[in-house]
Length: 80
Image (cartoon, rainbow, N blue to C red):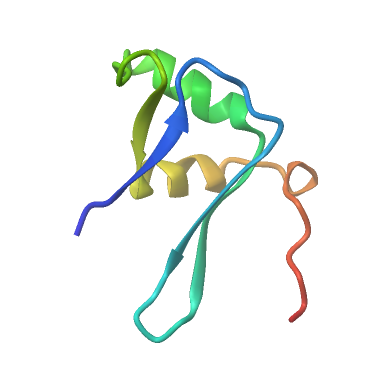
């Protein structure tokens, strides 16, 4: 199943975290890093915005971008 996340249109957030909550309650971190990579990806794909406010990005694209991040660009995961 494809699902999408909202992202501010044409804005480089300092940091963006996207998670998927599995039916059993487990969290899957899809993206944990600077927003500049998401914004650049959306610009490269020429994604349109909704009223110039936000656009969407798929969970699969977030996973792909997350795989390419350096560990130093991520916020540390909590050891809960």
